[in-house]
Structure formats: structure tokens, C-alpha cells
Image (cartoon, rainbow, N blue to C red; front, side, top):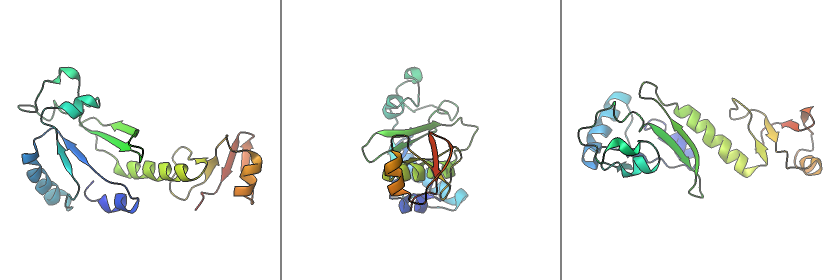
Length: 168
């Protein structure tokens, strides 16, 4: 995340970290990240040593105890969850990764790009969409409205599927 923070900033997106470790240990974490990843952590980290936030958002089961004291990485394996929260303060995406699998922040950037594009234009992004790929005109958009927005027309392999270049 620290290395990709400028990419999130370009998208007017803020990063916040959550750790079940106490705030007093975050400085060491930040130093470790800078040493091993070559990137400085410059976003806020929330400490959740009483596990309240992690439990509230389903990252840990209720029976996980009431403190991070004495917990190991194996106990905290489910606290590897990524949330994307929209401007309306609602969770738009939640991905949980097992401890053995690295998180894919390029995918998170792709999702943010898609959500920002689809919020601005009446389109949807297809499977494996990347910035600049074709998009789908929403079914709720009439052909008349679509013709105004896309005077060059669209590909329509099915009547309900109208494919156009990504809007700018």
C-alpha cells in the first residue's frame, strides 16, 4: 500500500490502515515496511487492540477474545481484509485474503477505477476490464439516450448488450 499510495492519491482516494496491534507498535511496522518494501507509510493507521473494529466488520469471529494481547499472526489471519468505502461512507467492496496469499492492490486500483467510471457515466465494466477497455452501456439507458451519448454507435452482440469505447 505504501508504494502504491501515490496511485490512490491520483484517484482522490484515501488509504487508512487498521491493525489489531496497539498504536505504540505501528512505528515499528512502518519502519519494517520502509526497510523491506522501500516505501514510507504516509497514511493513518488505526489501532484496534481490543478487536472491536475487526469484530464489528466481520474480520474476526466474536469468540476471538477481547484483546490482541498474546495473539499470533495465525490467530489474526482473517484481519487481512480490504474495504473500499465510497464517498457516501458505505462499503462498496470487501475482499478478505488468507494469510498465505498476498493482497492484490493492482486489483483494488482497477476496482476503484471502475467504480469511479461507472459512477460518472451510465456504463458497467465487463469481466477483466482495465482502464481504456470497452465498457457496456447500462440496460436502463434507452437507445435514444445512448445515441445522444454515443453518436458513433455501439457493438451489440445481443439486444441487451451494447458495447462502446470507454468514455473520457
